[in-house]
Amino acid sequence: MSTKVQDLFDLSGQVALVTGGSRGLGLQIAEALGEAGAKVMLTSRKAADLEAAVAHLQDRGIDARWIAADAARPEEAQRVVAETMERLGQIDILVNNAGATWGAPAEEHPIAAWDKVMDLNIRSLFVFAQAVAQASMIPRRSGRIINVASIAGLSGNSGAMKTIAYNTSKGAAVNFTRALAGEWGAYGITVNALAPGFFPSKMTQGLLAAVGAEKMAAHAPLNRLGDDDDLKGAALLFASRAGKHITGQVLAIDGGVSAVHGH
Image 1 (cartoon, one colour):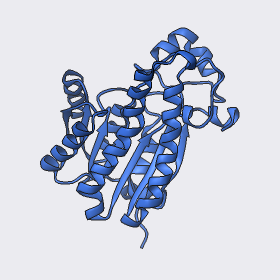
Image 2: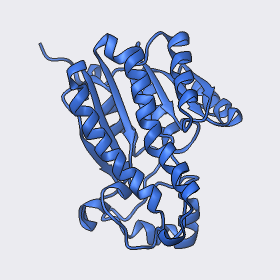
Image 3: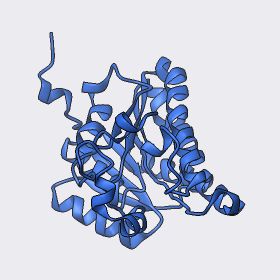
Image 4: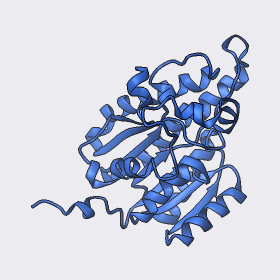
């Protein structure tokens, strides 16, 4: 007996934990999962940002709450998972979205900045995934992990973006996704990645200001940047029963940039 398509995308009764969830792409994904019926737990470093984000989600009729924590610190990540389990009883969906970048020519890039980017952009994905899997997904033999990578992890760049640690971390996120999918399929856990192109956000505002939005958009066959809705459908596909046979995949949401600029 096949399921109605609307029901395949329904997340009622599920719990989603979204890192870096107080703004930008994380908040957009939280909106999508919450509107599909999931209870949403947001985490990021700043309580004020989280309060505003949760109020925004609640205004949209979403059951949302928050925990302030630094995702780059393993003990903080473990605290977030433990507290989410205590308050909500389970974690069905993990969205590993927290990330940072650092601009510097490779020959001058500070090692401390390299470590900061790598600890947040790739080590925290492992720490959160491990903690959530141990606490909820492996015992219940089901789960959805969505890693937010980037098209910067699919190819090199022309040198305009001097972000060697960021690009390296996003390439690692892509293969982390594939490797974890291979191991954890046995537990009924799917692991997929979104690879956004350029979306206006706090992280990209410097580059957009320097290069110009029109020039950035011109790199894409669709001649546009991502907007506040463009990650929602893909995130919901990976999070829901509609995507239950999809794992280890990386989906570029980039207006076609990666298709024409090569991998």
